[in-house]
Length: 483
Ligand SMILES: NC(=O)c1ccc[n+]([C@@H]2O[C@H](COP(=O)([O-])OP(=O)(O)OC[C@H]3O[C@@H](n4cnc5c(N)ncnc54)[C@H](O)[C@@H]3O)[C@@H](O)[C@H]2O)c1
Image 1 (cartoon, rainbow, N blue to C red):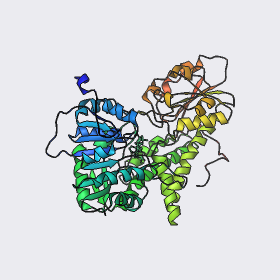
Image 2: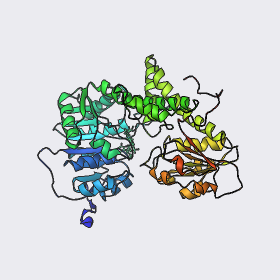
Image 3: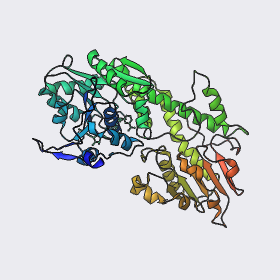
Image 4: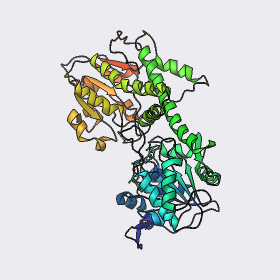
């Protein structure tokens, strides 16, 4: 009964509040009592996935709204499949603002609070260290073993450095035999977080405390449906590996986009055919090797920048990470260039897709948003549309672009349409709608994701496909700068 799962507000000795969904016990002998500190885009899915594996999970957040939602069986973040998984497992999930209560009632704590990029381009511990201090203080009252797992993305050296120091100071004793510290990042993409958590290729566990690493390995294994490679490493190696995975993947993306730009200048060339072919070479691999547009989101861009900043701080060279980032930024210039070859300033351009990828409303560092701003700056009249991200649009974008409520409204009579995000809905775009506004000049669709069939685009509209040399571009003096 859905109603029986509704949260009951339980009295608590502190001013904090605890919601309990149900007392029904589904635990198996290997089940653990786990707390998850930080119930955001990563924390809420992890808490739910852990509950789905039979663990008793207590989620903690400083945000009372987030706690109340999760406790009411409502997903606090929009993530495909999360609500369904929560519905099926909420009897093993509680949520609270009381860290003391969560630490007292659990044996392992995952910390997933923000680590924003600081002014030095590295990850800041401004949220993490206060959380770790509170965890350490709460652990003073316990005598049993406890594992603290850092899941937030941190800089190499931070876990065994300031995080460990802070935890030990708050705890009043050295880590090791009673309290263990591990670094265990998740490799997820918003929009497929549940699947990515349950089917990882790689589980990274960094720790100086092998007993704690063993527990984290068991916990990760309890919800993995794949057979991932488990790398138990020195903490610093795990921290470097987390950044190395993301920067390598972004390098593949920028590489494919570099090939695309070259192909667009060679008559008859097709970058997709090239990257698909080379992806079959096992030394290369086809994943994330596809010509499109800039990568974005809350992880990829900043991980690259952080690795570059780290290298600079250490006096090492990181030309590859820097070039990957520069190539990525250049993708927006490249798109503006393509639009300018299609229409003069003052023309109406519809940018379809504001989220950084399909399946999520997150618009952080998104190609669509960057493009809309850039086109507005170049004197175009910009319309934007996204099937899920419109509520995220801020005032700055509203002043640069007209936010439309439907795909049809965005496209109606537009001179140029740019498909910036691969939302499946955009494959259903009716190009005829562009022609509805007669009397204007030539019309162009720039399809960054190969969603449209050329045969479905009527006469009078040019389809520009990223990476195809069928609209050969003259050699430009504004070619990509040296990284
Ligand atoms: N979102 C992603 O795609 C992703 C992927 C991999 C890694 N990460 C990393 O995970 C971490 C969290 O990212 P996110 O996207 O989930 O962040 P988020 O902003 O969506 O959520 C963070 C949550 O932590 C809560 N919080 C902050 N301080 C707290 C405290 N002291 N105690 C309890 N709760 C606290 C906030 O209220 C918020 O609900 C970051 O380090 C990020 O780099 C995120």
